[in-house]
Amino acid sequence: MYRSHNCGELNASNINTEVTLAGWVQKSRDKGFMNWVDLRDRYGITQLIFDESRTDKTVFELAKTLGREFVIQVKGTVIEREAKNKNIPTGEIEILVSELTILNSALTPPFTIEDETDGGEDIRMKYRYLDIRRNPVKNSLLFRHKVAMEVRKYLSDLDFCEVETPYLIKSTPEGARDFVVPSRMNEGQFYALPQSPQTFKQLLMVGGMDKYFQIVKCFRDEDLRADRQPEFTQIDCEMAFVEQEDILNVFEGLTRHLLKEIKGIEVDKFPRITYDYAMKTYGNDKPDIRFGMKFGELNEFAQHKEFPVFNAAELVVGIAVPGAGNYTRKEIDGLIDWVKRPQVGASGMVYVKCNEDGTYKSSVDKFYDNDDLANWAKATEANPGDMIFVLSGPANKTRSQLSALRMELATRLGLRNPEEFAPLWVVDFPLLELDEESGRYHAMHHPFTSPKPEDMALLETEPGKVRANAYDMVLNGNEIGGGSIRIHDKATQQLMFKYLGFTEEEAKAQFGFLMDAFQFGAPPHGGLAFGLDRLVAILGGQETIRDFIAFPKNNSGRDVMIDAPAAIDDAQLKELRIKVDIA
Image 1: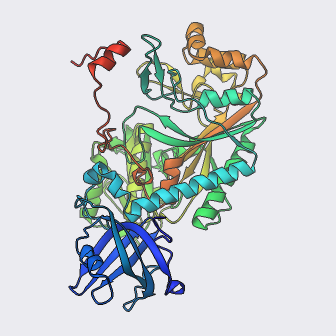
Image 2: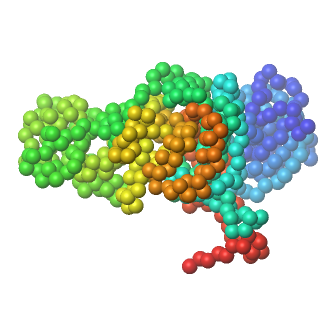
Image 3: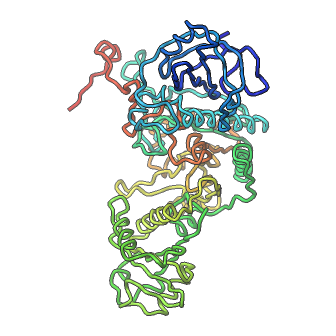
């Protein structure tokens, strides 16, 4: 055996015990007649001592050659440490080494393997295997493992069965671009990597599996950001003979279980709001409700008052920022510049200071009197000492801009506490959304989402008003999961394809296998998928998912460690009958 104990478990109860340890050299301190080495493994750090008066001379001299990240094995006796370190579990003891074996020497690493490293993100991504040795990354991966195990435990206890589905499938329109894989055995044809196991989990319901789950890799060829990777992991679930309420209860229970087991937090209430309410009140469909600043619509009080900007706007809307009434003009101008950035796109912003004496000071005092501004304060729920910020313009665009401002202000004001958790459900999404360029409707979720039965008649006359039997779980301003009740009969599915602009031939070519399956007794069913990467990051108090993924891609979708993607040689291209034509 290379070790009898790990580097995090020895303590005062082990004094005088003969032990064998193995691990990496964290650092060494050579005092000439005495040499201390910190030995590290996944479990912790143990201090080794090489004493000129007590250690074999050959061993003592060999210890002087050790460099950072050398892999070594030692044998020795646990002794009491004179200068104790209360910051680590092994801080009361050290190992008086009698034998030392260098298992592998190491080059000097390109950055220090410490919690606070001197390595930038690019260099750490290139040497990710070294980065994983650092506690922050190592602990993030262990944290992810713990969350995944709790998910499996909770679902298994409810009789869910974990079933694997294929990675090599056919390309289907699901909203993002597919990654495609050429088939050598089928000339000119391609597999696609799944954006989700959607159709397969529905087929499992047709197959009678009743309750399915899978922690599964999915793939989408889309632009990246802090919480998005080209390959990501879902907690994918489906249930038969259920209605929406059954699904919400199960996965509300899962979220409650994770918060309790992982964070020690009890959450009793999961509010439910409609999509329309979310958009009107927060400007997006994944609102962060850890803080207020709800939208107040001001058209009634702000238009027809000789201010042409507001009079010409489809929507005038504001938020009250708590305690911001003392902002300086420089701070206000800075926020106006912030909303004018291309990423937000506002043309300007109006502000109103709510003075402690009940009066108001505004950038549009010329057009509005104190009574007008008092109505603005009432609509935005502003109090004395607050500041009201107002945007105007096209309704959807303006709500999106104000939503971005709301989140930015909350961040600046410290209102987004990562250790506070505020989950909610958003329900009653639109079934379809109009693509203004093509003039065609697209499924807001996917083509298999069931419409609300009471809205079916609107498909013919007002398709944009049809609500979906769909729902999203939102946690701290992030969508962590979403799903729907599925269409389970062929006639309704054909009708859905029709309104999505599929011809009968196109629908059969893309989804004929699913339509055929529906003819053999498909049960009512529905499901949900949680984004595991995002869920773990939020529970871990982080915004970015990368440190919770062992080998992530960068913002260009590249793995800089293995240098992928990469060109393939001409022989492979010829075998696949593919010609690369880069203009």
